Length: 177
Image (cartoon, rainbow, N blue to C red; front, side, top):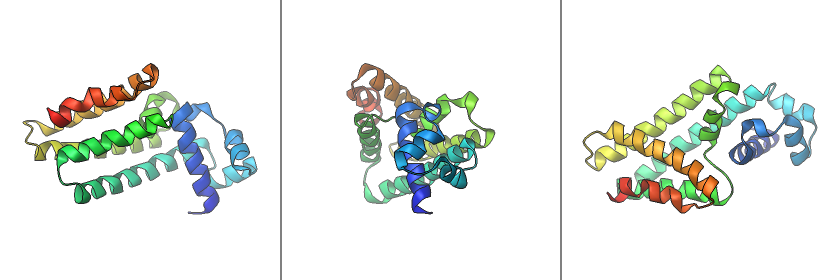
């Protein structure tokens, strides 16, 4: 991946997580990076192409991070705590879940991006289900869905309330309960 393409994706991720995908334009990206608008179009013909590349990259990165947690963190409770801390750190930086933000803009994203978002959330739920299975939950898929729903909802509430601790308060019962 070229350095310019990576810089565009990195900035688009940051802006999406802080303002939403519809909260910036190619002109905003070009001005911030210090390149011409046509350079953005060279790498991403349409904003839908940029959105797809962002979600694909995020899904790949998350899959690798989950594998690292599975191999590097001993207990499922500690792995879930790591996930919570990751999202809390994003909130402290003024960001919210990239795919959650994109999903909130469902009506304005392409069908391809919707499919990629569905794959991201399915992969996240599958990984969570594995954690809850290891923890001995009676219905791991249901626990995974509840955790993910509580996570995404608590991120919104924490942002509105200006209190990052809302996330761990909402999810503590899954880890310690």
